[in-house]
Structure formats: C-alpha cells, structure tokens
Length: 499
Image 1 (cartoon, rainbow, N blue to C red):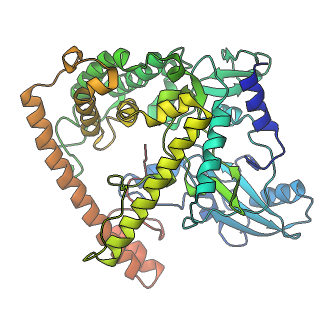
Image 2 (cartoon, rainbow, N blue to C red):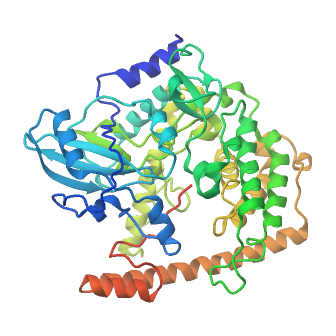
Image 3 (tube, rainbow, N blue to C red):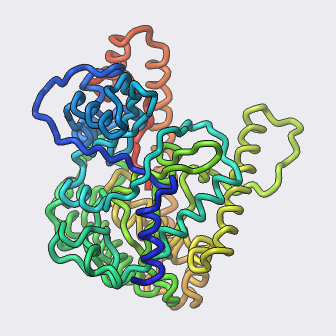
C-alpha cells in the first residue's frame, strides 16, 4: 500500500474525532403517517424544510421527500450508544442529500442521524459513502453565527490536505469494489476500493439518471471536463422543453433555443484541451469536500470534531476540486484594509468589518497549503482558478434559468483571460467573439440584471407578507396568492441551487 493511501486509511479508521458520520440509514417506509416525534410531525420530518423555491417548488420538494420509520430510527440510535430510549428528536438544517436529525438519549448522549433523500440512486450514493468517517462525536455546535477563528481555518486546511493525500488513477466517486460492476481499481487498494460513476446530483437530475454513458469514471481531466458538456448536449437535444413566449419567467430567446445552447457548448469543447494544466501535479485525482458550510462542520472547544455530508463527493482533478470553503466566501471584492469609518452607516461598517475578516481568513487558508501541499497551494492560489472552474461547472447548467447567459459570461471571461489561463496570446484561442456578439451579450446582461432585480423585489415583497402574517392560514393564503406554494410557512430563499 502506498503512503498516501495509508494516510487516507488512517483518516477513515482513526479513533481521533476528526471526521464523523453517525450514518443510521433507515429503509423508506410505506406507512403514510408514522408516529409523531417529540418536536415535529411526520410530514415535517419527511419533507424538505430548510428553504423555499420561488418556482417549480412542488417538483423540488418531491425530490427531497423521504418517509421513514421514526420510532425505529430512535430505537436504533439509542442502541448505538447504549441508551434505553430517545427522549428528544430535533430536525436540523438539511442539504440536498440527507435529512439531519439530532437525537438526545436518556443518558444525555446526543446522536446525529442522516436519512438519505431519494434524489440520487441509493445503490450508488450509499455505496459511495465507504463508511467514512467512523469516530463517534457526542457534543458539537453548528450555529451559523459561531465565530470563525484562525484555529478552525488552519485545522480545516490540514484535514483537506490529509484527505487529498491519496492520488487516484481516474476521476469519479469512490466505492467498495464489491458494490459496483466495472469500477476502476485503485493502485495499492485493488482488493477493496475502486473508482466508479459520479454521484454528483447533476448527473442524476431528471432524464440524466438514464444517461449512464456520461457519468464516468474518466481517465483524464480533459475527458471529465468534456463529458459534462457532452451530457448536457445530449440532454438538451432530446429533452429540453423551451418556455412559451408568454411565460413571465422566459428571459431571452437564446435561453429557450436548444440550438444556441448546443452551439455554445460546441465552442466550449474546442477550448477544453487548451485549458487543462500541463503540470501533472495539477491533474492529480483527489477527494475534496466541496460543500463546507457551518451545517457540515461540527466544532467542540474550538476543535473540528466532525465533517459530514461526503455524499456526492468525487475524486476530481486537483485544479478543479480545490476551492475556498463556502463559509469563507462572500459577495463583492476582497477587502485587505479597513476604510475610514467616518460617514458610514452602522450596517456599512458591519459589512466592511465582515469582508475584512473573511479576506484575512481566506489569505490564511491559502497560505496554510504552501507549508503542507504545494499542489493544493498552486491550485487554490492560481489567479484564474475560479474562471476555469466555473467555466467547467456552468457547462453543465446552461438550460437552468439564466444558465446560458452565465455560461457565455464565463466563455467571454476565459477568452479575455486566455494569456493568464494558458500562457499563450489571445490570438491563439480557438474561439473568438465578434463585436456583434459582444454587443449582444452586453444587452443581455442589462436584461439579466433587470430580471434579477425584479425577482429580488418579488422575493422581498412576499417575505414581508409572510413575516407580517399573524397565523399560518394567512401565510398559506399569501403563498397561494403569489402561486408559490400550497404548503405551510418557511423562510424564502429563492432558487437554492448553488454551484
């Protein structure tokens, strides 16, 4: 076994409380109404309750509705920690993959249970969990307003590097060898693990769940980046359903034209071979947690004791995988120095301080990698890293809402940053944009900004109606009046997709 794989095995098997998933998987129940829990009715437990969608909500909620046997889950959790019974069950904020539950036992031990959503084939997603990680954690905090300090950021960098220390031969999700057919063996661990198809949600949405040929595993960074676009070309040509011209959510003729999408994706495919880093170290296949927000990081006494939600994580090219954690990101430019506070409103001072603090923590996070993994440092500090990453990402979302505009924006940015991305003059770029195309994109950008402003106005108006309602019936009436939902109250957060 190679040293990096031994390091990964130590992470998975270590008794130190660095990673944890108390994965109490439960079989879907056919019962329509399981017993009430201590704090929530069955429908609330089974449904997605961490946000709302302004449109297409019914379909989004169906993807995340998962009945299960509440009482059996409580019994299983109690047995796992030698308790007699569960005295309290609380539902925590959830993601797309799992519902997260906090169970408190009669001996004061707390257990986290994760119930998988029916979003992706459980045959693949559950198999790809690999039982990682195994240590038990019985005290933690995941408050959104918890302070983020130097210790936490430094620990997180070390954890990410430890997981990324294993170099795999292909790109895709990790499986036990016996769980799937046709997996690619991993050098040094051919007896146990293999690389198989990607469990990323996008490869399973709608009709894509039947498009096995585009899901990997991939043998090169180029094959991975091109495979995403080829999947979307196939889906658009076969299944895309343009919005009617009278639909108020129709943003542009090009967004609703399959031909426009396919033409731009074809141009993207010409770029890909030139964008792949020549440095072999930047094409290492590594695991990297792509969804590090406060709900997925458990902290006790200023120590990270658990990182959860590894479902859907794939082994990807290091140049594409390594990114800033979500809890360190913010809208707007980095703020390296605090401006004078004179004349600023209190909320402006607070925003400047927040941006300044996050900027310093981002710098710390990046600098930590210089000392412990030069490949990761090179990937995450590369000035055009985000341009290349988002170009590849957005190639898989062109049909979603304003996806074509955003993808074209990244194509233009790639063209403009060609020298920085490839080290070659812009004239060598195999794709160019005419003056007419640039003018058309600028006009569409204005329309896009207007549309986003209208959506934000509607979101704020509906939120104010809901916030001012005195009872649940009033909230429901407000939602129905806006044709947003027939369900009960919750906080609105717009389209929840985050790339």
